[in-house]
Length: 173
Image (cartoon, rainbow, N blue to C red; front, side):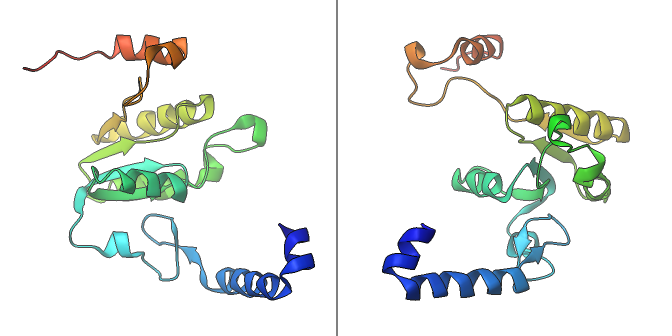
């Protein structure tokens, strides 16, 4: 991309540079959910149309946006900005989980939905957070996993298929 801009679109390169410089000066973390915003508190956290008793924990702002695209979740969020990954030098302490704990124990939150990825690191992060919150009396749930909608069994890996079988539900109707 850099070579293309330098060779064929120097104006575009300058525009990109200016936009990045502006973002570095104006974008910060939301004081409530930790996502990126230009304000002290982001628009999602300020919305009166969201359920303040639900808090969904995700790894990244991209994950939060994916949850929003489902149009199925109307609660609030907390963005970890990472996951526990000892091999990468990321510990629970470096994720700032004390802020998440304070948010979850604010007296308004009734359920924390863990929506970390189903990787080893995401699972470890979800387990750590659940172990941290459950003794405090907060209901902790985990998003389900299994065969994707529209997926064909012959293309699903055996681990996902086994998990879907273990988490099967009674058919209604």
